[in-house]
Image 1 (cartoon, protein in one colour):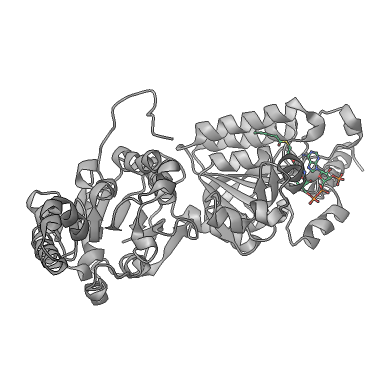
Image 2: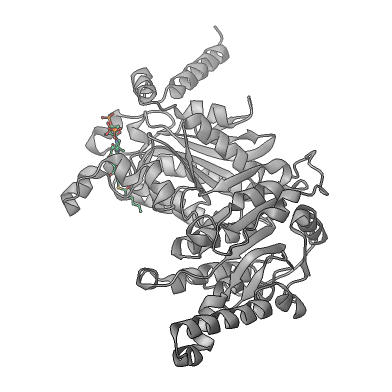
Length: 520
Ligand code: HXC
């Protein structure tokens, strides 16, 4: 065997050893927990044969706690580039079979390398997290490694899409990088996100809580809103990442890819002419409207089980990727509260950063009032959504279906927040508030002065009717030009598509400044 042949044989053997990570026993343990290995995950994520790995032979440099005898090529993370549907992406998948995927200085350097490449080359960065956090044996070097990653997450924000898969326990530093990225996809029953696990919680707060209750996908997709998607299993999680990418551009200089569809742009839907109940206090399901107007009824909903009074997600309209924001009258009457404002505010900012037009469907009775909301900061949180819409320069098309009252009217992509095209259905009510509240305030003296309860009720009814006629329609707003046109509901799809097409080359810039100061 020539020297060269021998060296090539060594390389092949070294590669094979590196591919085994922490070894067959730990891979079997990983499978026994219903989890895949880092390489199996990358294999499912990327187009076949497209993966180019970098840093396969990187090792840690720690010599404390006997770590010099515990070195594994790759050091607990698999990094590189590949394609998804033919589009370039960069990936870093932590390998739990090597020191529980914990982050060493060297592991961090590998992750940072691909993050830098993603930004330089304008491609999405996908991190699959499965890690016990900072590698304890490396002390401050591991912390420094996390800080390097966080700094890059921050600088990449709004430049390339950053997506985090949470595919195992993620503790400590392992949760903050995902928190800085655009989307977190958790896997039900096998992934957890928390600052510290149940044992530390017990010792610090005395609270008895298990992994799932503390930071499972169920918690973060329904209570905290930290997870944008809760996947049924890892395959579903990987598919969600791919679906999500199909709506996104590769970077902030590009438009999202077009998706051909056989769904005619001019399709009308008569059912929409009957969807609004006669009783203004009766709910209907906004999903019916979204499904009716988008291409092929396909809607990728984000944070679907958190703050369900507002709906956000991606769809295509005549092939163009759009971000949909819609009040949901079927949940809390579609009111804007703290969580709904945070949810939609961040989504609007994401779409704006990545040139994705916004389609806003409005049926909102107002902001939720009361001590719980005030103490929780509804003022500052509501302002986040207001700020996000006012700041956004992407095309903004708004359709008011029914209620649009007060501050919530302004917030939901109104004309004065630079809404480009604002349509209303004939069922729209655009006013400071509904008739009941308005009459109670404007005619309080007269109502108090009524001689009998019957007289009071009759006066109230009469004034409500007057108010309804004057304000509870779209024509007052249309008469001032705040609404560009009152449209037949059945025509909503093609009117919105036409609007979006007219706005395809929209140019609008905010004033130059170091950065804005949105109410965090
Ligand atoms: C070094 C670690 C590790 C870590 C796990 N391991 N976490 N090694 N540093 N942080 C190792 C274990 O020693 C073990 O090695 C292997 O990984 C698998 O771990 P197990 O505990 O056997 O697995 P499991 O029972 O599945 O539990 C997983 C876990 C648990 C829930 C993640 O390991 C855990 O609680 N780890 C610590 C989590 C934590 O508190 N991290 C915070 C770090 S501080 P062997 O060789 O025995 O197989 C931090 C601060 C950053 O991250 C702050 C930035 C803002």
